[in-house]
Length: 363
Image (cartoon, rainbow, N blue to C red; front, side, top):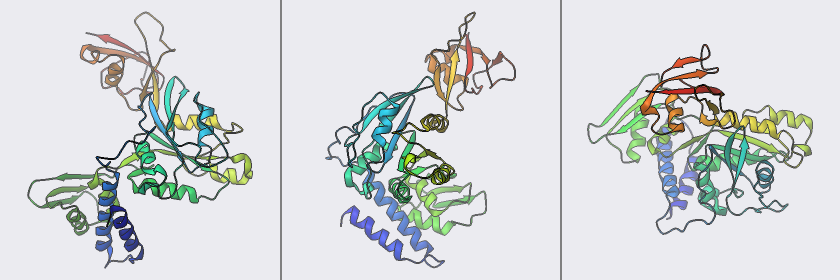
């Protein structure tokens, strides 16, 4: 029996098992086995050949994966936002490999990957799905293209496919400390009251992974699924924007309903509607900021800013300018919203904000 058959068998058993107190540990065991088999499915085989066109070198300040079902307008989106021409046509599976493009926005170069259409069963390898999903795991953000004229079943199917290969959309990592040990059995603690998981469940899950000595600390009330995610340690937590295309073909009431959903944006690629707002939302979701540098006695260089992530310190800025600058750092003068007054003399741990200006003084 192959891995795919084992996964299908476990999924069938989970579906037919009633959820109650008596079966919760059995279900926990099944979920752990399922996670283990899916992890094996993700590991590339030694003799497997690489998929042509899927190995795209990461470049630019951020990477965005454009995924969706066939014929939702991904190629049109890529051609509209970037200088790359991706073949667009009215038939499905026009794009057969991964096509990269670069969006130039507010001084940043954002790499946009047009991935082939995902179909149901992609996680099991249908329609080159596993290669598509492997590229999506390396992105900083997932842009999920959906057809506004079709029911929301596409979104649920895509989420399920990505969930099954360890991509968690718009979720944060569970606050659980887990460390495998060489001896001493299981040490289990929690800093809050647990209602969805307990020590026996944790022990059952760990035994299925053949782990008998470990230290576990729950810092929040998590489910057994979230604990399995922590144990497998190959999950990717990515922000996701749901982009509903073809809004020119539906009623204004339906557009309003879709636009009010969380993390959702409504656009029309053909008529170039609302693409500027989508770029603003993309910038916010990627948490990018611009920092400008200034030489003593000269005006700031607003033409060539540094593109960094929200929450970076002066030390990160120094590394971005030159790798030896942090070692020679004495202090910095900062103008902008991260300071109480301008210019403010700051240390290496000062956190920068968007559009700040910095002047570094060396020892």
